[in-house]
Length: 421
Image 1 (cartoon, rainbow, N blue to C red):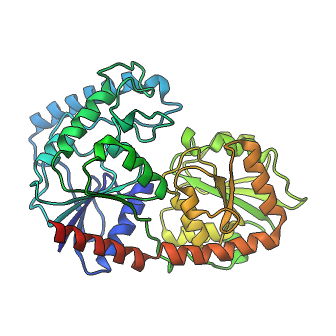
Image 2: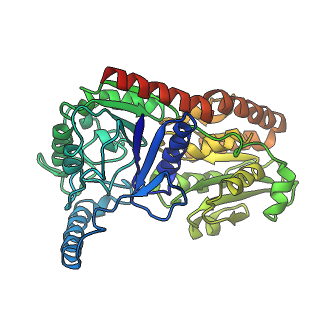
Image 3: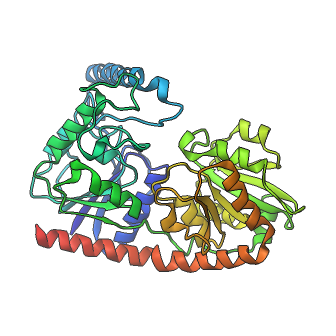
């Protein structure tokens, strides 16, 4: 059995999830290749797909101009709303991306925005070849948005998109929806959602009405990497006194409105520390605003790429917070509970699959700063509850997100898909 994975980059949450899922099927002795736009990955199982690579200089300049005009057009239609809606991606690009090489037994897609042109890519895959698609956000089944923010048009047909500056009957969302409807027709499409919430959303979209199956398969985690360590030692390595309580969080871009860090800043002003020493620790893009406005001391670590280093950061925390307004899954939350650290967040999206309220963390029903502050205060003050939720989280991660078990489930799906084909 040969499987090809596709994900635009090798960094970011979707890429990490895709690579972990890829690792899980390699452990099941499935022959695979992971394609991305990025290069220089130190593994023979990874390959770079750059449709421009072998073009002459003249054609490269022509395509560069076409791409520049393309994204200027997108910018003109989304710029005024970027502070709220993070991304809008067309399905059709100003260049073609035919399949790279020989098509395998199964094509497994992940996050392919801003890389693969839907019409040319899907047209180059024979109709008998099954396509498995792991969803990391809503883009595959909408007209272009990655999170719908309450808009229900994706259930029937996108148009008059609220995320566009110039919504209209035949706007960019309508064109994207029509393109996807055409390329998905007569395809053997098997949809894997990374959470139960995402699976339900996918089932509601008319774009996936003919999908062979839509089911949830949680992303895996390597328990040998993300595991409990000495909290005192991990704090000391980061220059934090062992008796200081640490609130940690992280994201690729803390300025992202969806990630809710404005809510976290406000919540920190209302947190009851119980007269204990408390400080904030975060990783990802540095936020001067957070450091300037936080009432608690803040330590910024920047981007932490090493898995072992990330595990040390999680273990230095006493509470991990995910203040997202929308969240497809919650990979940092999973890494945290696997490390024995309880998580605080909101009851949104796929986060409840990872954070079981009152068992592996605390979830606020209302998406407000005060509700978040209340949950943080409770865990900071109650050491016994903190320890119990942390212990529960380790078991929850092991029982539901184990690398070997999730890889076995995916391998079984592949076998089913091939049998049906």
